[in-house]
Image (cartoon, rainbow, N blue to C red; front, side, top):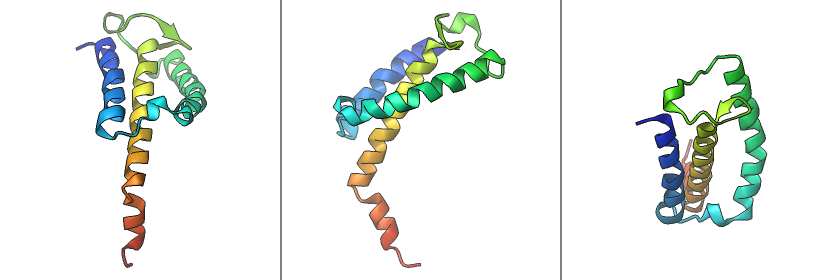
Length: 107
């Protein structure tokens, strides 16, 4: 499976995870899009730095060839999926009281 195929699979997987597994519906909330807008410039900057200095390199047969800030567009797809998945889990675990349970344990 190519990097492009994995990236294209990651986005709908993250959306389905958010909507149906955690049921947080973060993808529909303004707070998610605000968070994503804050993270995205840093992702672009990091991708640019890593790829323009050839610290991270991609083989052309496995990517589309479209680049943003010298990084393959597939990186943005993966970044989106990761951010959505992490935020969805964070809210899910928070609503389940994961932090509260840990705070209640005797030391």
